[in-house]
Length: 282
Image 1 (cartoon, one colour):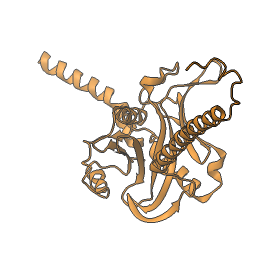
Image 2 (cartoon, one colour):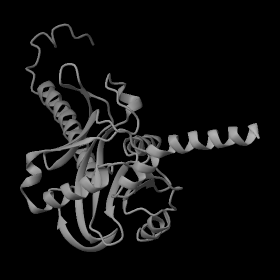
Image 3 (tube, one colour):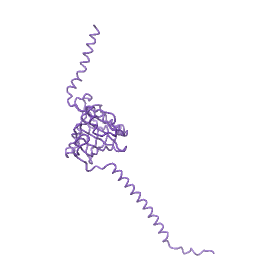
Image 4 (cartoon, helix red, strand yellow):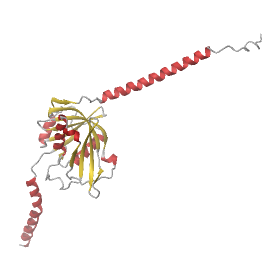
């Protein structure tokens, strides 16, 4: 009998402890999830950036690396198996160029970016700090309210990076903000801690810059809604750098040739020495 009473008391305690979690699940209405993963062949820095993004999003899920031989639309099936409505996908070309896909699965739209100036949290070692799983405030540059393609990107970023209210893995605190700035036709991502004492901000990390390439009407493909006219491919940048280096080398070689010719001309144009034939011996 005492054991039965003890079991009933323990069951009542467990029921009381699970009550807040049950209430939280009842209030959890927005149940969207974001799948964050990458393709095979990414470098360590890209992998660390992906881990940082997963840490910032409590509602994120992960999966094994995608084979590079697979077509991108297969990601829609992976998201469906993982019960995810949004996706952040990283892929790398030539071990140099990192690309990020942000997509609304399965109907779109989706956007492809070139990721530049990557700095992970381990590299920066900044003084800011926040609670793991806390819900962030999203801050956008006023430029996102202007052009139609920026308004579309703003809505897409809000859906992906905003943590749903009462999410089971989220904490009921707002102690950091994600800022999306727009400068030089690029999106600048920053993560700041909200310091309560002085109402100031302290950067946490990571840092990266998104250079928009295209916006598609479907998930990972479809018709092109917008193409960035200011986008220059990394191959074009490298080709221009090689051309400039070759031009500098060519100018340096031409300068050396001209200097040698000038010295030879000056040596032949010198006046003869009047005493050259004075001490000749036969």
